[in-house]
Length: 143
Image (cartoon, rainbow, N blue to C red; front, side, top):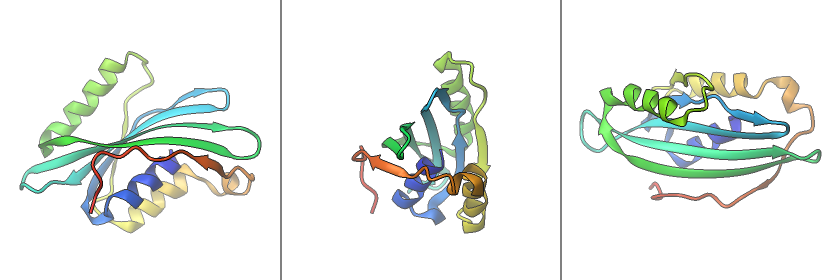
């Protein structure tokens, strides 16, 4: 999940990111699949862009293979996002739990805290580093 957050924040300007929703990952052995959704400032007041990063990652002993898909899903009224996130959980049928909402409000200290939590110091020294990252699927590109 930390790699997906990092990808999102390299792709979208931090001051534009209001909130993140971190959906519980699906873990199978050394494989992980996950979804991250972000509220990004829209061009029309009161509306926001919904941006997602879906990913698959696999630890193979020498590193981590990370396959992300970055998408802009559309623009919606800001007050509708919590309902949209609840609908994603309902429709998945996986019963993994509710997404965790994290308020960033464009603050770098909130990002640092989140990344520190998702990637604790003990995992940084384990030697597990990204071995390969697939090309990113983007729709559309950000300025």
